[in-house]
Image (cartoon, rainbow, N blue to C red; front, side):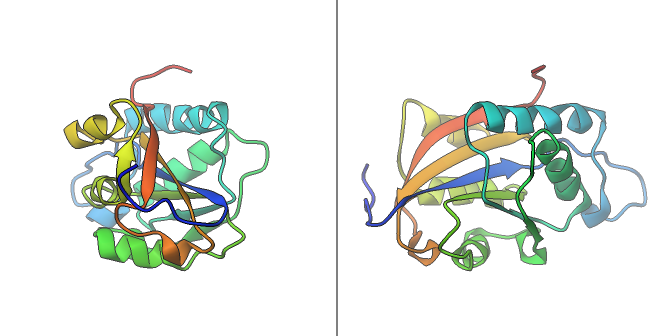
Length: 180
């Protein structure tokens, strides 16, 4: 890893880009619902997270309709979903805004799920990843499509310690178009 290794427990930031949305005429961007493919892919993303043992202790989710629906459909695949905090700052956020939201997470949370939008999520993953396993960084650089999941691991005593270059990108998964 080229970034800081850090001290403290192993923490994971799981980043989930919302599933494919619809573009109904006259509907504000914030209120756009999921499209048919999004309704198929979001539950698959939830099952993929469960299969990868990446279930979160807490979820932070954009307030946009498509992000909330992605969260609801994905988390419905788990026995007991964790608490979710809907945060308006996660909508159309850039890296500094997303880090501000993540830095507020309580230290007892070891695995955090962040559900939001591009380009902010893709930029966040690339900024945080000091290194990646296999071709994970190249995958994100090439495209971080709807229903994409990135898993970043790092050691830190608090979430405030998460900084650019301090994490290892351990996995990238895409639920898009998969039947699982």
